[in-house]
Length: 314
Image 1 (cartoon, helix red, strand yellow):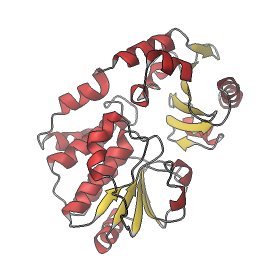
Image 2 (spheres, rainbow, N blue to C red):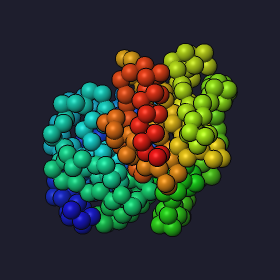
Image 3 (cartoon, rainbow, N blue to C red):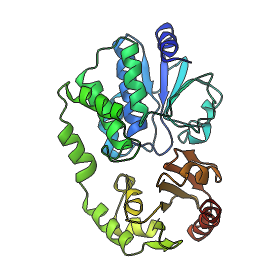
Image 4 (cartoon, rainbow, N blue to C red):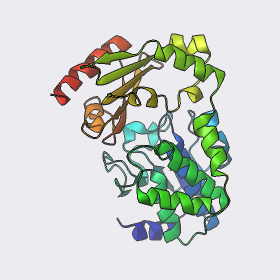
């Protein structure tokens, strides 16, 4: 579908529930909040699905829009969610009921009745920004703040290779509404809790290198989180540690989570397909940034990833 067709559909219908993905990041949450604000400006009734894994970092942006108990919605819209496997805990019953998926992941499985995917966008917020313009919605400071947060988090403060000239143009337009972009960047990228600093210390002392030091693996155990008193909020963007080392083509972060599973984040240089690696374990994402969840002990996860990498790197 075209963006104009999506806009026409949103205008024609009402009573929306916007859903973000499992273990939500800034792009999915803030893009959803911006879309909710835009639809409310058009007189629509809209709420966000109450994703239980929203971290404190993004609570102020997503919190005001969360669905109240008993809300009867007519249409489910997903944002930045490539597959039904990425639905948040408790939303499994919504599989097969999604009316519209708005996404920038090339791995989108076309699970919704209507789908709009633009894989050239650095963040889903770029699509939401264009959609709001197509809808004729005036971008308020509140919308601009949400869109900027989404844009900045998915581009690593405009440092990742996915950042384009259009990304900067959108960021400039958002800044012109009067938002304090400098403070947003400080809070997101230059401010760390004591627990985060202690966790980084444990990580840096236990880095593992493979394939002539071109692959670096970071392992975060539940014990490490307990010792440093780190929360999920303290693990945001932790994948950038391994991928930022000179000579590393593949940076992998393996984080032990509940129920004997591990969350895997992969960051690569352009010559290695992160999406292809994670897809082999039921995950996906982008060419240079992808993830998956593997139900196995950390040692087995590490070994399986290295086995698959040996095929990709040859």
